[in-house]
Image (cartoon, rainbow, N blue to C red; front, side, top):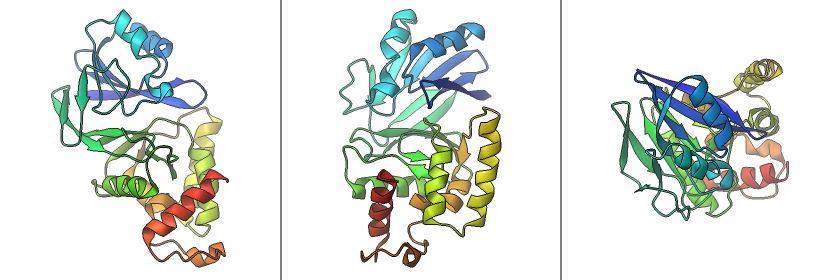
Amino acid sequence: MRTINCIPAFNDNYIWLIVDDNKRCCVVDPGDAAPVIEFLEDHQLKLSQIWLTHHHADHTGGVSSLKGRYPDVDVYGPKSCRFEAIDHRLEKGDTVMFADHHYQILALPGHTLDHIAYYGEQSLFCGDVLFSAGCGRVFEGSYSQMFDSLNQIKALPANTNIYPTHEYTQANIDFALAADPTNLRLQHYQQKVLSLRSDNQPSLPTTLELELAINPFLRCECLDTEQWQTKQALREPLDVFAYLRDWKNDF
């Protein structure tokens, strides 16, 4: 048995904390140590693992303080990551054990070249690759790499729970509606998210089943591109993805 808790950080980050029956916990992408320490102490939890998806500071910035306070913690992260405080370096096909369950490592380059995700127990901790109704910017990799990474996620079971690390959902929905204005499920989802956020509740986690229905970056094969009035020839799904990502960058 496990529970997954959401710890807000900075302006829009979420730090995910997995707790087992023995009050041991694993924290995912702790960009800030302070809210994690507060949560651990308030709930009398023991930090045993830290999982990192990539090297960006808003995902790694709290690691040194957490290791200093909890010296027995094991830090897991990408094999190619330049962040030095990683104890166990992971690549595609590796597994991590927590709470008697295996989590598979997926290599998902695009946002960064070192980006990985942790998949197990019908849950995907995907960092900045996939967001609800959107996807991450392509900073280091290529559009082709990012598109392939999203296709890896699309191949997972539809009942997979998705745990991104940013509360970008409202802004992503605004763009998604521009790209896919007749999507009724997306319109209904917008109302749900508006209600959640008006109560200061997280819109996450999401599910892969939902994202396959409303996220334009996962729907490149079926979007009506003619309505966009673009002069570009968008013959292949990768062409559609690249156009969408460029459009979203300036939206």
